[in-house]
Amino acid sequence: MSLESLNHRIKTTTDLGEIVSTMKMLSSVSVGQYEKALQSLTQYTQTIRDAFHGLFTQENFDYKAPNTTQESPKILSIIIGSDNGLVGRFNKDLVDYTQNYIQKQFNQPTMLVLAVGKKIGLIASSQKMTISSAYPISNSMKELAPMATQLINQINEIITKNKIDYVYLFANRKQGNTAFLPHARQMIPLPFDRLQQLKRTKWDSRSIPLITLDKHTLFSALLKEYLIVILLHDLVASLASEHYTRMIHMQEAEQNVNDSLEEFNLEYQQLRQTQITDELIDIVSGAEEMNKQKNQSPLDFSKKKK
Image (cartoon, rainbow, N blue to C red; front, side, top):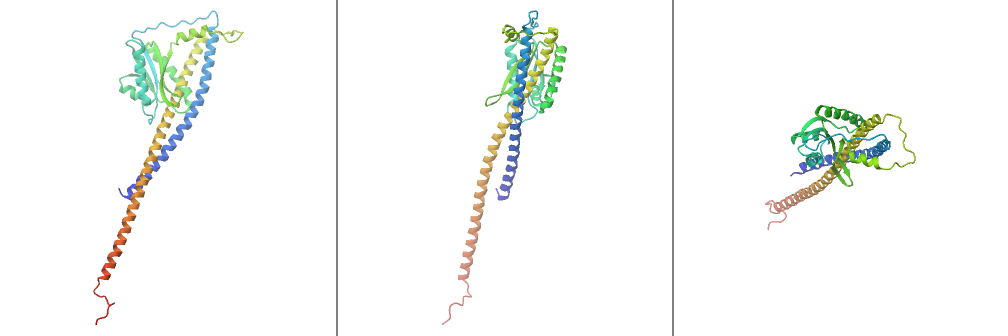
């Protein structure tokens, strides 16, 4: 490899390193933003659970689980993936997890998929999953709440049209130092055992909540708000996991770029040193040849004839 081509490769690798560093920094900032939003959403979710708890303390209110079947049920799986790449197996592992989870839970299920994220939709389609709807996912916090509301409306339409028995939500979450772990939660119907546990739990106050609204109307409103919040929570959690995964990949890419630059610079120095050595050898060889020719010249008048 010539010095010129090697120098060009060093410059290209340096430019690539700057791009990788910028992407790593942007992902790091995004992770912090999403994790802060998750803290607020977790607190609000607890507030809604407290509202359910207060409703279940009422003597004349009872929640009856809808009749569902475990045999050949119709299931809507909402899979939250990514729109962008550079995330490794982020989407593929989630699709595999969704298929395995549903197969273990039910006997001969019929599954429709609501894909959130272009990449997840492509992978789900390639694995012969039936896509009912597909949505791009926004990275803007301001757009996520309206998106969650829109998705809830779309879910209601799919349930009514296809007579869905169960709705499950699948998304990746960042857990400790692990960039992403697939996670599932049942959205509809609400897990009956958890509601019964709330009803059996003692209200943490001497005063039982006073509810003046119609209790079933309040339950419907709380249910809708709860579904929107958990959907929004998993959208944000997925984005935090996605950007953390990309940040790790960019760190690895940055290390590879630095290793390549170190190798290229060493090669450049060795090649340059070799070139300088060759030039010096040529100069010395030329000087020696000139001196040799000078000593052998027939026009040497340094000696007088006798």
